[in-house]
Amino acid sequence: MKQAVLLAPGKIIIREVERPKLLPDQVLIKIRRIGICGSDIHVYHGTHPYTGYPIVQGHEVSGVVAEIGENVTGFNLEEQVVFLPQITCGICFSCRNHKEHICDNLKVMGFQSNGAAQEYFPVDANKVLKTPPGVSQDHAAMIEPLAVAVHALSRCGDVNGKGVLVLGAGTIGNLVAQTARAVGARKVLITDISDYKLSKARICGISSAVNPLQVNLGEVIVEELGPEKADVILECVGVQDTISQAIEYARKGSFIVVVGVFGQKAAIDLGLIQDREITITGTLMYQKRDYEQAISLINGGLIDLETMITHRFPFINYPEAYQAIEALNGEFLKVMIEMPL
Image 1 (cartoon, helix red, strand yellow):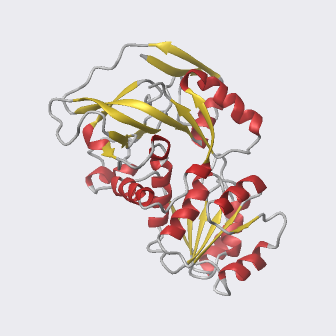
Image 2 (cartoon, rainbow, N blue to C red):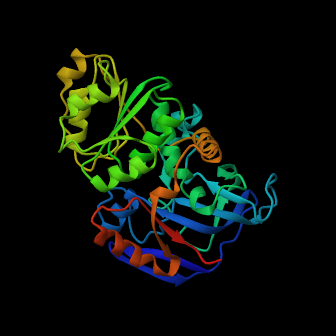
């Protein structure tokens, strides 16, 4: 079978390898779609701190069941599925307390272990979820990033009826904003310095979308969310400017959820956090229930995913996908890799 391997930063080759052998508790998935995310791009450039080489990428994935292990029940051949790309130890404090996603020994497929950028990929059956028949392969591959958004919002409790500010309109920020709206937020305001990404957010139904370089953000927050400002602020970029904005514009007693991955340490105003009783919490990946809610949101037609898939490449052109990402200069959201049938 064909496999795409990143030998070193900037160097992807397509090679022939043996089809994986299936263990008794596994499902063999014929891969159909692979999404490229921001973390994948960091790995491609050699700037991801927790990934070595060579590495097979691929964690935003959809496919169909090609083979079923002898101990596995509940699956049928050709059923469309997705999977949680987390390898956990099962014995640390987090694993013992139903928080496997923050396992002390967590490995993520495509980063600390090989991912699914190949024609067939074996996965433990307990990590595999079926997707409804009406969900396309493209949309199924976006269940993983949508689950990131679902989990991020769960970190601040129920947002039904609340005002939500999302800083960053990339793929995750867009999905966070759409999810907040879908679960009943009173109003959602999203910001970005990319007018392209803001335009995509508006097409996806987030009408309040502003560029903080062009407006007074503090005034816009009051105009859009009211004098009570944001109940919840989600930082979805991972840079100094946006975490500073989150703290500066937070209402007393509000929540800030750090969703973005920070490549550099940020300086934050602890005095304001203390004085305003602001709660800051982090979010990492997702749990199985977040996948299940993401599937439910997609199946209910509550999330616009099609607008977010901006570019597609055949698997054989995997290297060209990254070259295109470079040339697009940020004017893209989700780049999708299509596997051969």
